[in-house]
Length: 214
Ligand code: E4P
Image 1 (cartoon, rainbow, N blue to C red):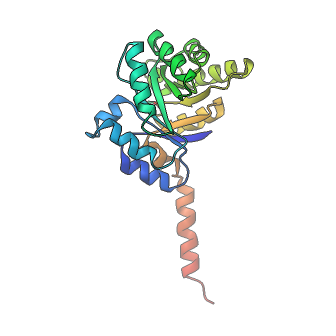
Image 2 (image 1 turned 90 degrees about the vertical axis):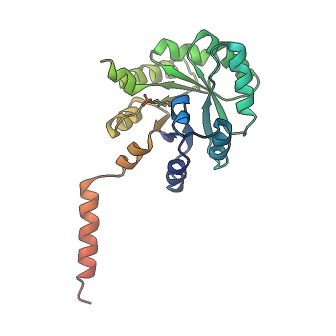
C-alpha cells in the first residue's frame, strides 16, 4: 500500500515529503478552503514537489462544467489528477477526461457498486471513505475489502485509495483489506511513527552508550 497525504497545507506536505514516504497528495474543496490561498496556485506548488499524483477536485456539478474544470486542472501540471464526485454527471466527465488521457479520482464512494461504476467509466483511482461510513454505523474497512475483491475477480486496474482515514487502525486495516493507497491526514501520519517500545529502546541505547567505560 502506498501512502498519499490528505491535505492542502503546504508545510505539512513538505514535511511529510521530506520523510521520503509519501507518493501523492489528495485535496478536496473543504481542505483547500481552510488554507485561504488560490486553489490553482496551491495545486501547482504541490505538484512541483514531484509526486506521482496530486488530486484537485472540480466544483461544478454538471458534466460540461466538470469537464471544463478538469481540463483546466490537468493543464496545471502533468501529475495532476482530476477528482470527480460519484454522480452520473461525474461519470460522464470521468469517461470523457479518461479518453483525453487525463488521470481521474472518483471521490465520495460509499458502496462497491459505485466503485464498479467509476472503474467502468475509466477512473484511475476510486476513493472509498472509511471514516464517514464508520460515523453512520457502517463498516468502512469492509467496503475496501469488497471493492478489492471485485476488482481482483474482474481484473480491473483502477486503484483503490482508502480515504477518510481517522486513526492508525484504519491505516493498518486498509492495507490488510487490499487498498493500493491510503490517503492519510498529517496528524495520523505522525501517529503512525509512535510506539512506546521504540521510544524506550532509543532512550536505553543512548543511556547505555553514554555510560560506557571504554
Ligand atoms: C479524500 O480524498 C478526502 O479528501 C478525505 O479523505 C475526506 O476525509 P474526511 O472524511 O476526514 O473529511
